Length: 254
Image 1: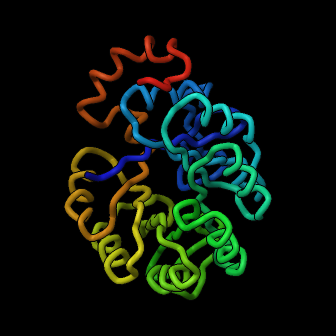
Image 2: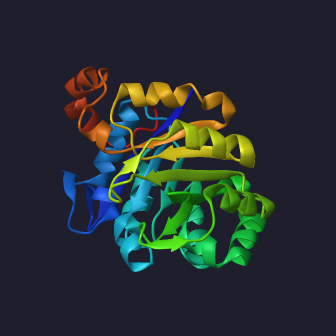
């Protein structure tokens, strides 16, 4: 069964969604990311994906306290990405109880660091973000192009001990991310690493298409905007209970 990661993007202490990570394109969904995490857990989320948007833009983790509060508030694994470009930040987050760290740009420029992280913390704790467009990978929010294919990069990472990548694909418009089951299946089967899909999920049918390739190694997906905007039929029932969920506090027994 495809594992769904509800995404919580944090900027200046609030939950936001950005158009392809662009500053100024924020949609505000909740003033309190911790309450949002409790809501997703109450709605039976098995795990969460946290993105430190401020960190993405500056290269350093900003929302330490909020991330730590989320880890304490829910009883499910939390993975974190955004602004993670040095060993000390990654180590500190893992010590605070974060289950997995997603790194992107630094993996392109500092392969010895990737190897050290895998050695020190294990392959389950470190995943690599790969952003593809027109057959090559991008970094810095899609702004910088690198002359290497997503598959070639995934194979390089596998040699360093990486066992999971988070793959997103930028559409032809250069702004939005798309869900491309063909690319995802090809990446998983030819690289031999597990793949988490990110971006391009607009509704139930997109999840069904991904479910069909789960057996090939595309075993999970990060979903943001579609969940926040109630694009799935079951969410109508979930919303009836939201006030009670936010009043529960820590959801360790939900």
